[in-house]
Length: 105
Image (cartoon, rainbow, N blue to C red; front, side, top):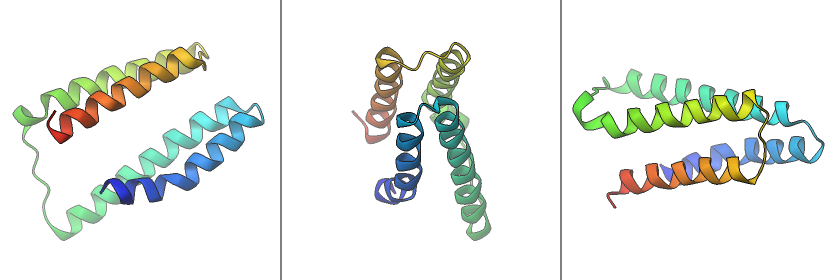
């Protein structure tokens, strides 16, 4: 799944880098948010057509809290246009924590 996610996100990543190089930070943010929402909708929709998707709330508490924190951080960063190294470090740190939790560290 990680390889598929990387392969489908790589084109959006390149477009985002080009937008940032040209000084279009808002276009980069819109591209990332739009591609992630489209990926979620397509993947969940396709998977639910094949088999029903069950959701166990008790086993997803960390994921939901992490998603809330990342969402609030992202809103704060974009609302205040804080596109700098510290914002990147915060978001990458959250990504590492989420992946470490998913792997079982």
